Image 1 (cartoon, helix red, strand yellow):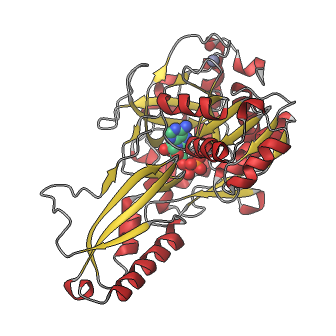
Image 2 (cartoon, rainbow, N blue to C red; image 1 turned 90 degrees about the horizontal axis):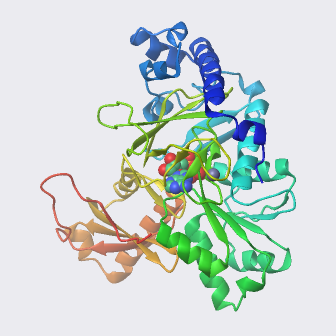
Image 3 (cartoon, protein in one colour; image 1 turned 120 degrees about the horizontal axis):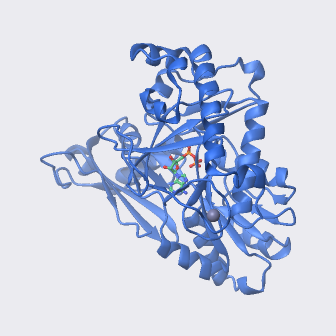
Length: 432
Ligand code: ADP
Ligand code: ZN
């Protein structure tokens, strides 16, 4: 089903008019209420009244992660906390999270686009949705949740992890749709097979999977392993959370809900807009956000826009799978991590040298992280017991700061290859 046919099948020309009208309003609102962005506009000498066509968008400055950090935590909010009904966060580059806020209207828009997304992936009000995205400060859990409730589905707020329990819910509670990261879905399939779960006999039919990069090969594996039709969902907390875009059952690119989020793809080096079909960095401008509107936010995600009609009838423009990032952010078990975060944890530990190598592998369906860390001569000649203690300490620090478990291997001084140029810190052997 199409959740909101009027909005989702609107003729493209009509939507362009709507986008322009909303863009003008949003830019004016931001200029008046978000001093940090106003300063950027003033710097390049552009006023809200200069926005007369959608093409004028390119005159506006970019909003970046650095702007978020500079205004941490609430500096980009345009309303007082009294009017902010919720705050979420995503992990940041320096170990400090970024904060994003929502008014009641923002939560309503989020529920609306999430309902559209779930419908794209096969949900109807009759669906029983087992939501295995993490609930908490991350936007995944609550974002999916509010969209599913808005549609009138039955939601199982299972949250992430606890695989044995997830399998029990899947078998006992009549789950028809699973929502989680693709790697976790694959893991559920493997764990289920070990437990003798017969997925073919279950009512489970659809999966709305995202929050991390995956591939067509992985989609096939997942679809076979848990017997579902799997669609790709995209979103990011800076824009709203999950529900910025979702594939329809045609599985040919994700429809961007572009009456709320105006996309562009640019050349990340020059900042110049690229035509549909060409790969570059995705830029999103929110059109209806209140608490934290974002004009030309640089997502750092690499994709391309796909023009042309879709057999499903939706007229929302589509984007291809995310193929990478312009920065070095890693997504490990759905958690965003920058190598620099790991580095800063390591370097606070005594006896550790500033040489390390992060190995990422996929063990079964789950990401596995092993970090090789060089230690000083003195430490390395210590007793095994002491070395083990140090490994454990580093492991705990990483877990504490990043919320991720990692295996630590202390290695001999000077055993990690030195680089002549940019140091190679990550060996990503995950095949996705
Ligand atoms: P989330 O909690 O959904 O991961 P964050 O704001 O913490 O939200 O992270 C957003 C980032 O996650 C995106 O910028 C993108 O790099 C990645 N991401 C989200 N959805 C997808 C997807 N479907 N495919 C690839 N990467 C994705
Ligand atoms: Zn479609």
